[in-house]
Structure formats: structure tokens, C-alpha cells
Length: 461
Image (cartoon, rainbow, N blue to C red):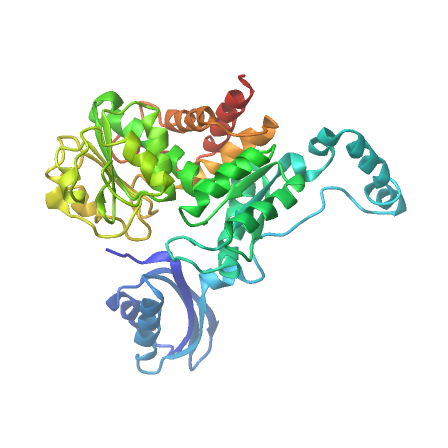
């Protein structure tokens, strides 16, 4: 199912004979091994050779090597250099700090720093709330991780998690004007993480927890919410849940079903799955069936942690047991945040008429979207190369923009549901269809709408 994409884009600089067929030979070689050319630039031309930059998308690092070897195998062609465009983007990091005030002369320096800054320090000491007015705290979020659950790659540690946290910070700034900073902690001890975040909290207006493995992430978030007077938001949980609830509301509009009448299967009961179940439960579905690697979650299961026990007690009203395929029979909705290639079109055929399938495992979903489309009425994934991409960037920038604007001291389910409704409402009736249930992440209306909804919910009481 993988297709060439920009995540594995390369630029290959080659020397080739100056023949009339050179361009065709080069492009054909790339095409024969499945590469997709996105740019072809002649950078030098001589009587005896041309130098060309060929930019193309590949499916993997190995596929990129196949493309390079295919070019090099052509008579008279020599590969000078291969540049991985993703690595080039990350050289030196993706974010920086810039001053918001001019420092042109001695007067500017005296106000921005000593001696003038001492007056600001004294004002905050007398009234700590002034930190939100007079410092970066009013617009700053810490993106905190221990590197224990980086994307779908597992426990890579804090240094390897840094590129993801940098990217998150860049998205905060791009989509909501929020100044975010990576905080990658060199510990995976729950107590140390909680204490470290407590210690840095005075600088920030909010904490975004990221890529921390379950079940540890649940305790970390809960205890930090109790200890801190700023919002603590675990994006892997609540960002995903907001987007799923919004997308499902619109998908059910497409198929003409009411939430109160549908049975939902949620596959994966880690951070994302648990949060989806908790938020969806407040929308009153007929039933939710949770499934993990050991099968359907039910009350009689042994050795459940606190999170799993809550899921068992609040789902599966008939207390059925079995495997994923059993749960799918007659279900109206499948939501997967688990593992690739768990079922196929035959299992989707056993679902109810007008089935909705959200296969969100990344990069390879629980079912090939093309297989799911054979029987499902609406299909969504976490991928950008299929319709209906459910991506957390639809939620977290606007959520924090709203929290910061409200100077919120915490976050509630009412705020999360308000964000989900605002996100769903952006796709109005004229645009809603089976291939468009959530807006594009580049829709300029998304972050402001989510932010305003969260701000109103935060200041409502």
C-alpha cells in the first residue's frame, strides 16, 4: 500500500551525455523503479555533458537507493550527489528564538535589560499574575516528552524525540501564533517527570505532553493537572480525541445516523484509544466496544490497570468477549489507533449498512483504505495521501490559542467538546460528503474557530 511521498523525497545530481534522448532516458529510469519525479532542472550544460538535478518522491530509504542505482546504471551517466530533502530541512533544527523588541542603542538595552528590567521583576514579585502580562508566559507552551513513545517508532529516548518536538513547536507558531519550546527530559521515571515539569512551569502558560507511553502518561497528566495552575494537555490523548469526535459527527451526518443509535468499535486502548472512548462516551453512543491485542475488553478480564478497568466498566454493555473480527459484526463505526493490517474488506462487509471506518494507525493503517472503501460508506485515515486525513494539527494549535487567550488555569471536557464541535462545523452542509468530513490542516479558518470555542468554554463559568 505505500506510495511515493515527500517524506522520502530526494534530489539526485547526475552527469549525462548531451544527447537528445538524455532527458527521456533519465525520467524513464526513475519511472521504471516506481519513483515519481517532481522536478527536473538542468544546472549545467557543456558540449560533452549536461548536469541535471532530478527531484523525486520515493517510498522508503531503500527505494531511494533503487532510484539512484537505476540512474547510475544508464550508459554514460554518473551520479554526483544524492540529497535527502527531509534531512536537509532538519539541518540545524527547525525553530529559533528571535527578539520581539529592537535593541538598537543604550536606551533600548537599559529598558529591555538592566537596570530597567529590575522594575518588572519587582512588579511580578508583588503580583505574580503579572507574569502573564509582562513576560512570554502569556503565549508560551512547553512541549514535554520523555521519548518513550515517539510516533509509531517506540522508545527512542529524548534526543531522538527532539525533531518531533521541534516540528510540534513549528506547527504551534504557524497555525496559532503560539510560542512553543521542546522540553525533552532525560528520564522515564514518573516522579522525576512530574517534578521536572513542576519546576519549569512558571515560564509557561500551558503544558503539552507528547509521546509519553501509556499507562504512565495517564498518571503524569492527572497529577500535573492537580499540581499546576496552568492547562496540561496530552496531545496524543486529547488532540486525537477531539479530531475523531469531530470527524465522526460529520461522518454520521453523511450516512444519516444518530450518535445515540450507533455501536462503535475502538481498536487500541492506549493513550489515544482511551481518550477517544472517554470523550465519545459523553456524546451518548448506543455502545462502545474496546479491543486491544488480547481481544474485546470486558469486565471479567484479569490483571487490568486503572485505565483498562475504567474502560471495561464504561463500555461493552452486553459484556461480550471475543476478537476484533467478532466485534466488527454489525458495528456501525470502526475507529483504529492500533496496528497495521488487522482486517480486510471481508470483515468490513460484516459491519452494518453505511459503515464508517477510521483506520488511523500511521503510517500503515489497520486496513488498506482501498479495501475498506469496497464496503464502507466513509473511510478516514491518518495519512495525507488519502481523503479525510484525521490529523492532530487540526486541534492542538487552536486549543492552546484559546486556553492562552482565556488565561485558563486548567482544561475540561467541556472545552474539548467545544473544540470538536467547532472543528466539525467548519465543514458545512454544502461541502460535506464521504470524501470530505474534516477540513484541511491548511484551512485558515480552523485554528481561529477552535480557539474561539475553547476561549468561550474556558470563560463560561
